[in-house]
Length: 271
Image 1 (cartoon, one colour):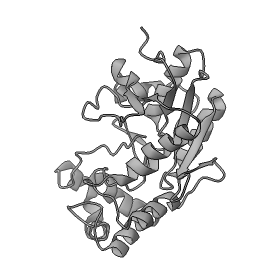
Image 2 (spheres, rainbow, N blue to C red; image 1 turned 90 degrees about the horizontal axis):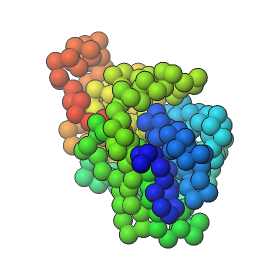
Image 3 (cartoon, helix red, strand yellow; image 1 turned 30 degrees about the vertical axis):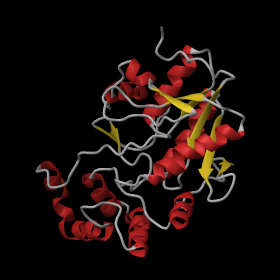
Image 4 (cartoon, helix red, strand yellow; image 1 turned 30 degrees about the horizontal axis):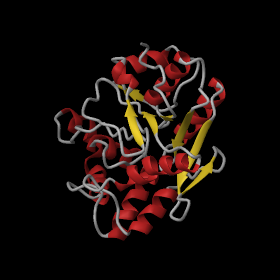
């Protein structure tokens, strides 16, 4: 059986706004003759995505003729709002609302951002559509065996890319052959700047580069740490990271090569 053939029942196709989940979407469309009437494509915007990501989501929908439901978390019932490219938050407003409501900032041990802003926001929308149970197509590749989809009493994870043996290099080769692409740098098969711009799951090397190259985007994360009085990451605060880059920025490439900056995480949140 084609690994992209839809399973029985309702299916959510989780589009994170990146190259990998767009690759998954394209292959699901091809394998099923377009978007089935029992499938919904959702994109959950946290407000901290790069502008290029929002443009890519719009372009995927337009070029491929597929409706994409844009969703954002809200702190009051029904806990979500349907938005579009024009009305989507661009300054972290959904993330701000979650932090204010829960009176804490997320971290490696309390990943409330991904759960609330992405997984539960999509779930609440689908329940509002009358769905009782469904399968969620999640874009975890074969070279990401450490990652597992979110499942509960309503949704079951489906990993077609893993079933198809897809790697980051497969995805990179696909986009080199297309007439359009996500306009964010691709280095070693990894998208630089994908998903939340300063996600604490991203490597120290990436976050250091963000502090150096896009201080205006790094400032949002630093401001929340200062207000909350605690950090997104156990190893350092964002202010400490910025100060480090101010002092060592010219030696950044050398620091990466010698392993002074942790690069253990890909930071590819999916929901």
